[in-house]
Length: 209
Image (cartoon, rainbow, N blue to C red; front, side, top):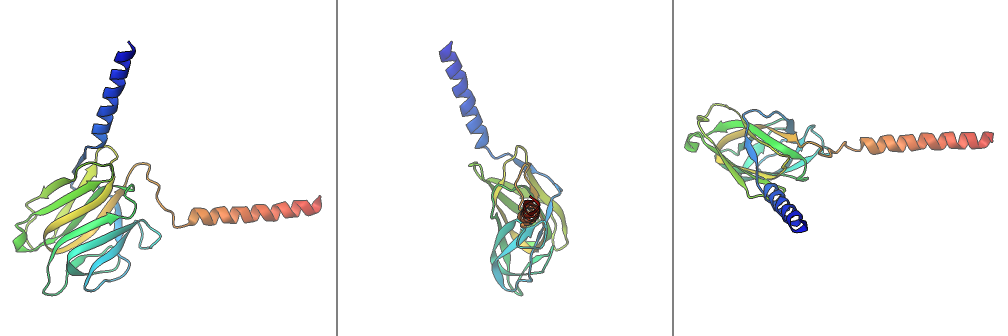
């Protein structure tokens, strides 16, 4: 009986480890999410930062690198190749790889892209990378939002987009269930203020005593 119990426990453990190591993102045309902001208009850059949820460095940071130097707007902005340049790859790497479970984007493609964007997502739970092909996105006109979502709480370590881009824009991330989202120091400030009030009251009542 004990042997059977141990065998069942071992099988369950192996199954759990196998499931946790399996990437389970799926395509979602419009998963929604928090906007990715760019704080400044970058010029002729290949590495810069984005901030999720608000245009402030206290918000969750995402490192962005590109193959082909780019110009960007400031805010919920677009990313374009520099004049006479090309943009063939973008990599989005959240500084905290446990925060985000969904990703989506919009943009425009050059004719050489054949209407196709390749997205590779690496999860932060040890799974193999997953590759998605978005097709039929047309030429120089804006294409509709494209994206992926996690089915079981996996989070995004990195996203790589590959194509011949005219621009990429309106990028969004969704927070994973239970993610600890930074609050820009508000909690610390409130705690400090509360402690200060407690100390004032303590001294006031101590003098009365």
